[in-house]
Length: 457
Ligand SMILES: *Cc1c(COP(=O)(O)O)cnc(C)c1O
Image (cartoon, rainbow, N blue to C red; front, side, top):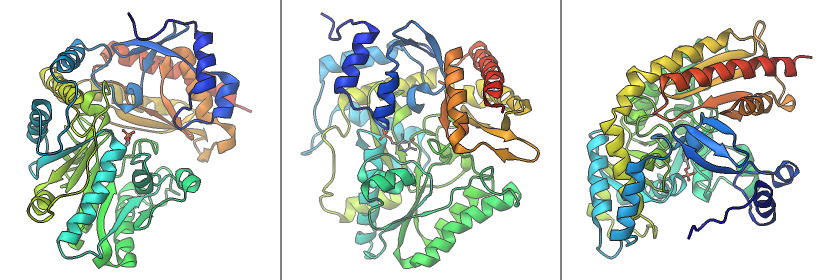
């Protein structure tokens, strides 16, 4: 018997309203409209309870990289559930899926990484990193080194520590965050600046804000810097080329740990296995989640470099930290099948040499539309900016809700993207075909024209 009852859309909406508190949602405004009920998915398309077919330009929530309905992943989960649906990795135990996945991850990660710690999500993984970073410096005899530098508008998750690492002001306001010992500097968002500096100069300046903060806090108190190679939820902020090399220089010079939050950029999205490969940084930690299982099951974790792992192993004694689902066998089995699939279908090089450049070229051309002020995309991770006028540059006021107007219009055309203020962001599955890329772009043009009319005075 099927576990899930078949009901009408209206019944589901009613039950949803009565019993379900959604994440990141204004419930009062949702209840005026009712939820869209997504019932199934195939390839790069999702289907709602009204039978609408929607091209998923966001890979779920940046995670369904291998596309929907992949039999390899379904089989891996089914077989592992029969064999061993759960066992923990505490008390000097382990099981084949957690061991095999750890070894496999070592094989695809940069050379400084030989060990991983598993968690259930990206947020939990970043909590783990806060604990490991501070423990590392305690063990190094520098217990005053506890401050972690992050960036305004960063997204590192939604637990207390992860939201503190993040730089989302509305999140901080609602819960008395950040926790002590976490400070923020400006993000490398050239388009959002006054544009008086060249992108190159601006990138250097944004990196040097980290150095200023280190001097401010006191170099002997700074433990680590954390950043997403490309900020995702903040609006796909692609830093100028000058940024990451300068950040790496600063981390090296002051001996502070570099944390690369690869929850979105990991497992191929930028056309390399990791964002650290793309930007040629040498992080001491990498956070992963989302794409590790293509979102089929929740799994996250942390790559821990030898610099840190060797100290933890040699000196920490018991490290009092872990999760019931650290290395969940079914999630690990799905991750192994997912990585095998990415390898056997050469999806990473496909993004670098084939679908990536193809979509990027069409994406750049959107800048010819009067509503589009800037376009950017690396691999299959992109954004464009809606503007009121281009010359002189005039932005829409937040209250005009231009982003939401466009997003809803595009959804009406059958394509899903996200709006972050007036920035439209896109991150389609790696298996997007050239024809599906054409469909995505054609519908974007149609929605831009319609939105242009709707937003004209
Ligand atoms: C989504 C995300 C997280 C949080 O992951 P969850 O699995 O939602 O806890 C952390 N960092 C980045 C960069 C993310 O995009």
